[in-house]
Amino acid sequence: SVMNQLLGMHQVEKEISQYFGIKRCIVVAGNSDNQEKVLYEFGDILTDSLDLILPEGENIIAVMGGTTMAMTAEHMGSLETEKRHNLFVPARGGIGEAMTVQANSVSAVMASKTGGHHRALYVPEQLSLETYNSLLQEPSIQEVLTLIEQSNCVVHSIGRALHMAARRKMSDDEMVMLKQNNAVAESFGYFFDEEGEVVYKIPRIGLQLKDVQKIPNVVAIAGGKTKAKAIRAYMKNAPKQTWLITDEAAANEILKGV
Ligand code: F6P
Image (cartoon, rainbow, N blue to C red; front, top):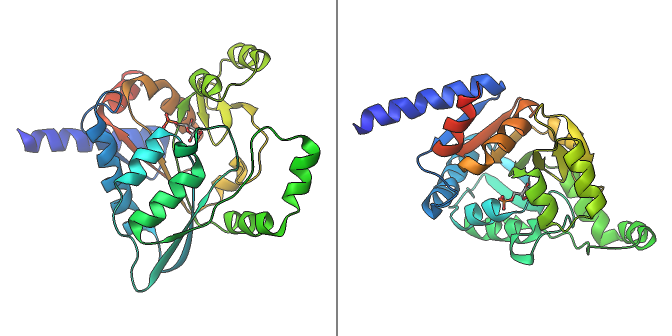
């Protein structure tokens, strides 16, 4: 019955949040590997979750990019109230994604769907260190970096390490190094092994992993059976305040290994 299914799902959510020692886990029925509707539901659930956790006043929400984030953003609803205002900013600059799934685009879509505001961070890819460093001195960039530093919420996804390295066109040397270090997961431009230890980091401006630890509201969104291993690896050392929004296919696969 539907009731039993709901109770079953609830049990899975509890097991997962306990296993990772995180604040909450929400599981959507289905498999986002091949069902778009699951990604749409992530949008509803992210909206409801943020509605619950975001305090009144001015919130700054730092978001990452990727296809999960982009699809989730498209299906968000209003989060703005008379007493609560939200500003969306990209969490990190230029880590190598196609325009439509860049953090800048995701934050713009989230702002428009939720009725909030957004600020973009313009840092082109492939800059020389010299140009990069001088760009960082620009007041307009400094201003957005300051906002990112002040964020009280971060929403991000989790990807498979080698898949993400290939999508970002990382070098052969980097690929070999990731394989040698058994990298299985990627988030925020950091690569993690199965124990959730960082094995490599793409040096970029914006939020660093240690900053995320101190942010009071953290939401991770990732699903699909193919991502189970990556989700498990990253979540092992994820900040304890994390809410994980995932799907049934990933959740069942994660619990198989427990
Ligand atoms: O590149 C941004 C990012 O959020 C990565 O940190 C993450 O691994 C990836 O996107 C997830 O992408 P997708 O949702 O397309 O699997």
